[in-house]
View 1 (cartoon, one colour):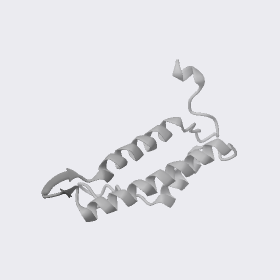
View 2 (view 1 turned 30 degrees about the vertical axis):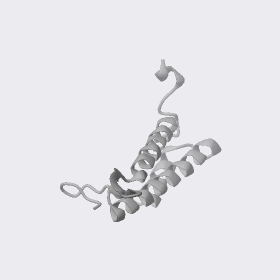
View 3 (view 1 turned 45 degrees about the horizontal axis):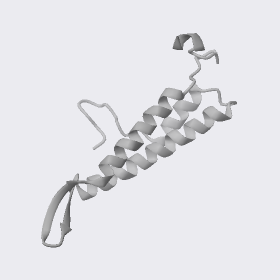
Length: 110
């Protein structure tokens, strides 16, 4: 795990993500800094769930009296929810350019 074709790394360390995001936001804005923290926590949660699913498998067997059912691992649903939260946080970041100016203005939303 961790690599796709070639040398593309998909398991970037949390610290590297933090450094990148902090370089792209106004670090004097406590709301933006808080978003980075929440974003990183969600990534950590997602990765823990991913490890559990990898270890236990994507399906589980449930016993009900004398019957057995194979179901999708319950964490798969939770992983989708956390992933949606990660993407929602991403959409709310107010990134700045290299001059410290916002990359987007309210007019960009119209």
